[in-house]
Length: 116
Image (cartoon, rainbow, N blue to C red; front, side, top):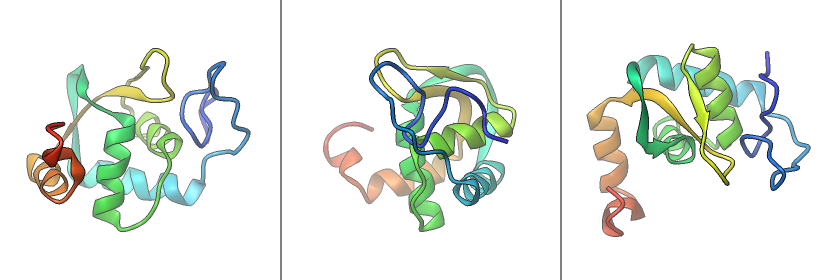
Protein backbone atom coordinates (compact mmCIF):
# COMPACT_ATOMS: atom_id res chain seq x y z
CA UNK A 1 0.00 0.00 0.00
CA UNK A 2 1.37 3.39 -1.03
CA UNK A 3 0.70 6.31 1.30
CA UNK A 4 -0.88 9.34 -0.39
CA UNK A 5 1.19 12.46 -0.91
CA UNK A 6 4.41 10.62 -1.69
CA UNK A 7 5.95 9.79 -5.05
CA UNK A 8 9.31 8.41 -6.20
CA UNK A 9 11.08 11.68 -5.34
CA UNK A 10 9.55 12.04 -1.87
CA UNK A 11 6.84 14.27 -0.51
CA UNK A 12 4.66 15.85 -3.18
CA UNK A 13 4.91 19.64 -3.01
CA UNK A 14 4.38 22.53 -5.40
CA UNK A 15 8.05 21.99 -6.36
CA UNK A 16 7.70 18.21 -6.75
CA UNK A 17 5.20 17.28 -9.42
CA UNK A 18 6.94 14.03 -10.40
CA UNK A 19 4.29 11.53 -11.54
CA UNK A 20 6.40 8.40 -11.02
CA UNK A 21 5.17 6.09 -8.27
CA UNK A 22 7.28 4.36 -5.68
CA UNK A 23 8.59 0.89 -6.47
CA UNK A 24 7.06 -1.94 -4.42
CA UNK A 25 10.20 -4.09 -4.61
CA UNK A 26 12.42 -1.20 -3.48
CA UNK A 27 10.02 -0.47 -0.62
CA UNK A 28 10.29 -4.12 0.43
CA UNK A 29 14.11 -3.87 0.48
CA UNK A 30 13.93 -0.67 2.52
CA UNK A 31 11.58 -2.33 5.00
CA UNK A 32 14.02 -5.22 5.41
CA UNK A 33 16.85 -2.73 6.02
CA UNK A 34 14.75 -0.84 8.58
CA UNK A 35 13.77 -4.03 10.43
CA UNK A 36 17.37 -5.21 10.64
CA UNK A 37 19.29 -1.99 11.29
CA UNK A 38 16.86 0.52 12.82
CA UNK A 39 14.84 1.09 15.96
CA UNK A 40 12.16 3.58 16.93
CA UNK A 41 12.96 6.78 18.83
CA UNK A 42 10.46 8.73 20.90
CA UNK A 43 11.48 11.93 19.14
CA UNK A 44 11.99 12.81 15.50
CA UNK A 45 15.62 12.44 14.40
CA UNK A 46 16.54 15.77 12.82
CA UNK A 47 20.19 14.85 12.29
CA UNK A 48 19.58 12.55 9.33
CA UNK A 49 16.94 13.18 6.65
CA UNK A 50 15.15 10.48 4.70
CA UNK A 51 17.39 11.37 1.75
CA UNK A 52 20.55 10.72 3.77
CA UNK A 53 19.09 7.50 5.16
CA UNK A 54 18.12 6.23 1.72
CA UNK A 55 21.81 6.50 0.75
CA UNK A 56 22.82 4.51 3.85
CA UNK A 57 20.21 1.89 2.93
CA UNK A 58 21.55 1.70 -0.65
CA UNK A 59 25.09 1.14 0.62
CA UNK A 60 23.97 -1.73 2.85
CA UNK A 61 21.63 -3.48 0.40
CA UNK A 62 23.75 -2.80 -2.69
CA UNK A 63 20.85 -1.52 -4.77
CA UNK A 64 19.17 1.78 -5.69
CA UNK A 65 16.13 2.99 -3.75
CA UNK A 66 14.43 6.35 -4.06
CA UNK A 67 13.75 8.87 -1.31
CA UNK A 68 10.05 8.15 -1.72
CA UNK A 69 10.66 4.40 -1.41
CA UNK A 70 12.47 4.93 1.90
CA UNK A 71 9.76 7.26 3.24
CA UNK A 72 7.04 4.77 2.26
CA UNK A 73 8.92 1.93 3.96
CA UNK A 74 9.35 3.92 7.17
CA UNK A 75 5.63 4.73 7.26
CA UNK A 76 4.69 1.10 6.61
CA UNK A 77 7.01 0.03 9.44
CA UNK A 78 5.15 2.34 11.81
CA UNK A 79 7.54 5.29 11.96
CA UNK A 80 6.44 8.93 12.03
CA UNK A 81 7.76 10.97 9.12
CA UNK A 82 7.59 14.76 9.17
CA UNK A 83 8.17 16.64 5.91
CA UNK A 84 11.13 19.02 5.90
CA UNK A 85 10.00 22.45 4.73
CA UNK A 86 10.92 23.34 1.14
CA UNK A 87 12.30 19.86 0.39
CA UNK A 88 11.00 16.48 -0.76
CA UNK A 89 12.56 14.78 2.27
CA UNK A 90 11.41 14.08 5.79
CA UNK A 91 12.73 13.53 9.28
CA UNK A 92 11.82 10.25 10.96
CA UNK A 93 11.64 9.03 14.55
CA UNK A 94 14.31 6.47 13.66
CA UNK A 95 17.64 5.37 15.09
CA UNK A 96 20.06 3.54 12.80
CA UNK A 97 22.67 1.24 14.34
CA UNK A 98 25.80 3.29 14.92
CA UNK A 99 28.08 0.84 13.13
CA UNK A 100 25.99 1.16 9.95
CA UNK A 101 26.21 4.97 10.01
CA UNK A 102 29.94 4.80 10.82
CA UNK A 103 30.58 2.40 7.96
CA UNK A 104 28.65 4.56 5.51
CA UNK A 105 30.32 7.78 6.62
CA UNK A 106 33.81 6.27 6.56
CA UNK A 107 33.38 5.37 2.88
CA UNK A 108 31.62 8.42 1.53
CA UNK A 109 31.91 12.12 0.86
CA UNK A 110 29.91 12.74 4.05
CA UNK A 111 32.83 12.43 6.48
CA UNK A 112 35.31 14.18 4.22
CA UNK A 113 33.01 17.18 3.88
CA UNK A 114 32.25 17.49 7.57
CA UNK A 115 28.63 16.35 7.29
CA UNK A 116 29.12 13.77 10.00
